Image 1 (cartoon, rainbow over the protein chains, first blue to last red):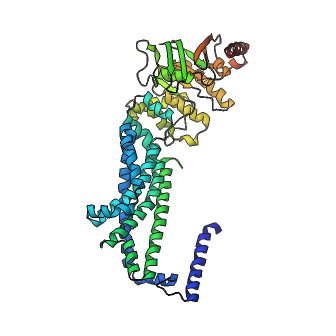
Image 2 (cartoon, chains in turn blue, red; image 1 turned 60 degrees about the vertical axis):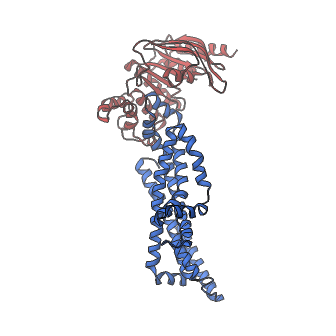
Image 3 (tube, helix red, strand yellow; image 1 turned 45 degrees about the vertical axis):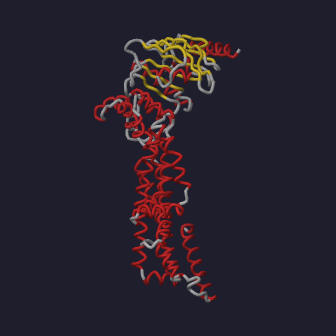
Length: 251
Length: 245
């Protein structure tokens, strides 16, 4: 129990120290606001910040869903045919190693619609772990089990449906957890790029806006919300994974 | 049932797994392929199952004998069950792959479960079962399609001695009941002597048939205490030492 409380206690001590230093040294709030000022900035306009958070989260989860569908579809295509594997694999890596900030402006210009272009950017970042993990999972069953399917004359698709896809489920779930965090990062990065182009409603835009106006407390409040959202996504997807695994009979 | 005629198998790595192997398999046989690791016994089993093809020679089946899918059951060294599926679902798998609905398969599933003594564990998942019970599920799965030929690749090698003795005795009873032909790969002289009617001794690199010994025993529960069993073990051992020279 004390170990569970440790991060909380450490956080409170940290926050108190932070507030203490800011007050003792009389640091101006446009350089470094104390936690009390940050909280005040949040309570001054909770609706605006939460609406921005909602916008960022809707981009994140839409992108995560698209990445999951695309990742699983392409991994299955690769498992179905050697030709598809040779064709897809190198391009998936290209997608992974290209930095999002470098392609985000292009995506935003091409796509036009702000929401869709943000989703495309976040999908690009979230796609790879889902795709790579699922592909690994599809290859995970032991050779004896695939032999068994051959022995009874099962088609490749039957083998994927009854053996490889269920075997890939734990791999997919851990990919989902990684991609969840990455999709949020992707959404924020894309919002930052899009924000400098004039349109955006997400939290990253609120951060940009606050920094232009030197409203540091509001900027910190937005940052804090983002961090909390990231933590919630990570823990939420981990918990979802555990529930599904238990239903599935493993775990 | 099957004539294996001067069969050779060479892998892409250059290893000659089997060279010039000839063997006759008759319906009702219980044949043990006995030899050290690397003598090609598992390769031979895969050739019989049709999971691999010979480079030279031919596998000739008598009319009406396998290789139609479902006519051959295969048991591996590990139980290789679907970890997410229950005992019943695991045994249903071969029937499902042959296109049977769950309802149509149920009598065959129940029969296989009774044969291997797994009543009461129908809904258990593999991780809730002991190693011996998992192997029973694996055997039941192989029996589900009522195969004419049962291929077993060191199925008891990973089990403890007590469990192994029990499963060996049960396998013999099954063999008599079901009337299937069994080809059993093992590296244990004792196991081959206890189970098989014909013991085929193989030598490694390249894998060849060295010698065949016919068992004079009629296996029962007490075979292990029978002096004739000790004599058979001794004669296999002598033949084995021959191969090492």
